[in-house]
Length: 538
Image 1 (cartoon, rainbow, N blue to C red):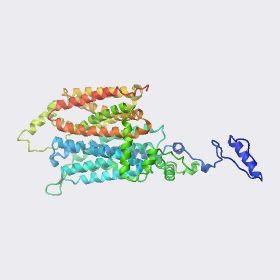
Image 2 (cartoon, one colour; image 1 turned 90 degrees about the vertical axis):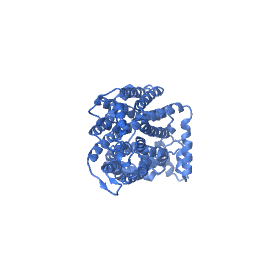
Image 3 (cartoon, rainbow, N blue to C red; image 1 turned 45 degrees about the vertical axis):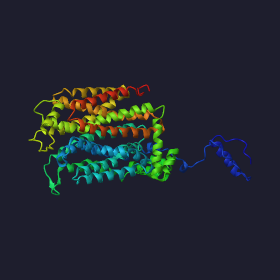
């Protein structure tokens, strides 16, 4: 029996099929493109985000958010936590200001060296395995550094810690975001950023508790185990807890699908469903996930057999970032990011040290540079030059706690003003106010005024990092966004390294000039931000 008429809807097709099946004549049914197949429920695939909607927001999402927050805390603890370690260890290592700068920057150097490679590994072996193994290795190196009596070896281990935690510094956001539907993702990532501010408060709070203890154990004749070494353990603790929790969490189903592992992705989503509701996907009539189409780049990357192939692909993929028409905006973002990190992290590493010196001179109102100059005079004195003082004042702890809480509050305030003012105006205002506060530090004598201006000088550029990262995403083509953000943040880490060592090298000899350079850089960032096409209309 010949079929002369094209079947355009599912009902007609089923009717024709029944007629043909009841006939004794041979039947040939042509395949017609665009016609729905008579698929059963088990053959229908579901989009991943639709399945997340069906399952609902639940226990898994909360645990992933908490774990991601701990990972971000660990990154900040291991990097910015050195701002207190450098003071507490200066007598044990007999460090100069330049050596303190290098010690503070060691972890940032490690992050800079491995970030881009980690970005590629997370797309080939997955988010969860990389986060677990790199964080665990970082914890091991951090633990090993506790027992190191030599400055150079201690710095090298801090470098290895940074190299290991590089992945957690940005892969965490990808892992976190892929457990949420699109409409929840921005809010959740903003909550994760609050852990960064909490970390900046956690470091001085724990340091105040630990370093207040006065004890030491003689391991050898030249090696004393003192409380500051125990503080390193507390800084690494959030990362260790996060690793333990991650063993119970599934891999991101999104990355599993992009790697072509449909079965593993379905099992991961099924685990989410069980954790959230106690029911399986079959109970929700979900039997398969729709397969994602792999890009040519993903296919090449996943089939790469050697490190050489991966590095070659990494280099080839980075080159389009520096081509027209987006190269101008991308380079501006990179320069601003470098400047922001130079101020927020570079100078921020010295904030406890500077406040500690101010605390020691609390009886006499002086500007920051006058206090630093007075310490130079003391060091040049023959009577005091042989005495090493690694005491951290109560004022330094309180001011550092205030800095951390202000950083957290800054994210809240940013959330309120970003929408009405727009990203460009928000960044320009933040940079402008920061530069003005930096300028005032030349003249202020009042301790409270110094703390307020110093904190604003540091945190206003810092809270703009997330805004600038979002601008990078909007200003480059879709297929380059991941690499663009990674490269931009790498240059930001370079700014941290430059800033920390710049302060260590020049603050004591050219204090006023050093602060001048930093607030002029903030003004330059404000001018560059005005060139970016990220106004509310765009």
